[in-house]
Length: 344
Image (tube, rainbow, N blue to C red):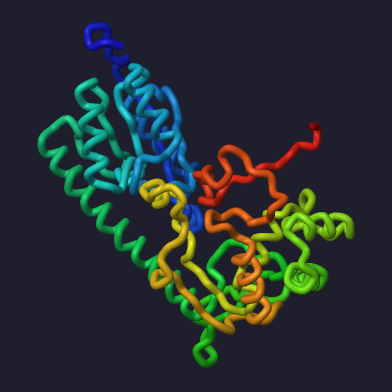
């Protein structure tokens, strides 16, 4: 819509925006409470609520939030003339980003209000107070993020399991870290899981190293034996076998902080998915081993001997395709592989 055609939104129309981060969800910060408070506030002010936009489990340190983006688009479509949040940091926790969005909205007559911080965004003093509060919010966001990183680093260095799911063959057990008779906190350790899954891991390594069976052959054998796959859904695939064969956790060594997060990975060159080893956390003998380290090393040796150097097995019978070794998955960074459908 051109500037000449632009029509202001109806007066006193408001969009309600609520957000909680993943950490705040765990601590009990409620979306419902935010919406309730904003509705009561709007009613007192005589504002008409046009819509509700909710981002659950997402950080306010960036604007990569689906409902936030939808709200911004609809603001430029003259749906409402103000945005209301329960606290100012629900809108954004990055002061530069918050200022940028406000400066985009104000020329079209859309202003951001807060239930808790009743600053008038249309006055110089109100804008100054908002700027100060925004910088304070960003400061505490940075402090909180650093505390979380420190806690994760300490847990990883001590051999505690920090991820959400255990590798196939293991389960997570919660233990209390004690100081004398005083309970300090709960931590999570890896212990042996389902005995059948433990034996399956051992068989996969044995078949690959000692019997020379390939990934697809192992997957076929497991399916023929009707062995439950990781997660218990669907058949075994060669990709699942590959993950198990290259997972050093099965040797009793824990490696954490290896993967680069999805948001960070967007800023990296294609194919980069691991942090450098000095930035990873490694703890030997942190949990029971399913296979010996010597067997794991043999897997690596055999895998390297079967690789051409571009990530593809050096099997003469393997069919080569135009894009073999060239396509890399944007999500995981692995080389893409061909899978026939069997239909000819």
